[in-house]
Length: 387
Image 1: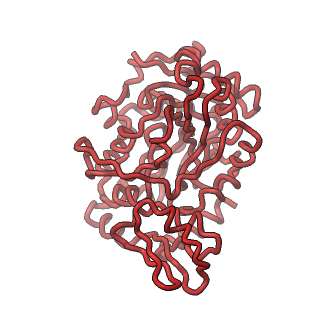
Image 2: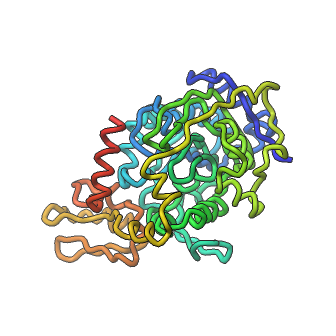
């Protein structure tokens, strides 16, 4: 029976966070069961947008720092912290880290920030249900131990986002785009589970102290739950997380599919929750996603949804005339999709992984993220909502 460590009544205070993290790790054998001296540790929070620390959108920076401090007690070779932003902020990983408060929280600490743009490698498997390959950040392969730090919340496309969905930040946007544009809700969830199955962390510690309800992950409302969760089994952790948000066992398809594939336990009655006896009292009835995006995902016929998805795109683009010839973008490109033609950068569309590493490293702003008109409008709305 899988074990999920749980602590209630937790606040965002440094000492209290370290105490709560230690408490939820106790029934799992403590951090020593996962990290040995000299290990290389990758910590993967959810930094989907340049959202403030109190929004419930991103994993709280103090929570990330507290986990890194606990890991540092084991004297690892290094600790790296990384993620890749969501659709509206591709190529802006460092901005998201700065405005979410993560960069500041990590400053002077044991961990180094490593945004995932431009670090991806392609992996193939016959076990993939949706596609034959996915493009995963190379940081995963460089680490001995991967620790996932999701912030469980409602999600307008999957109803719930937690440990399984947090793995999606490890893949390049080219992989995300293919999965998103399948136009079928079940296939989309199968694609998410494909990713989770191949980048499963050794340990998941969830920041459920403040979350999003309603139209999460970025345009909902903050909701205080005060809970920290930890488990080796990310599926079991999601089963508990969705229960705490008032969701039924069959309401979240990603959890159901992952359980059916044998990736973890999705039945809360078959999970040992190691926490206060009254832990079920922490359950809240979070507002469900609704509105236009939910109608598109759950109410629109699949052929129509596929047609609309084909009209939405985002790409790296290169402005003419300002390139200084540093070729940092060529060196960073994992798909070898860029070449220099005179003073201009050319992109091979077929080879491009859409990792946006070129945008992230360009010192002159020659490489930039370009959206279709609808997506550009969506980005403006997102910026206005967050600020």
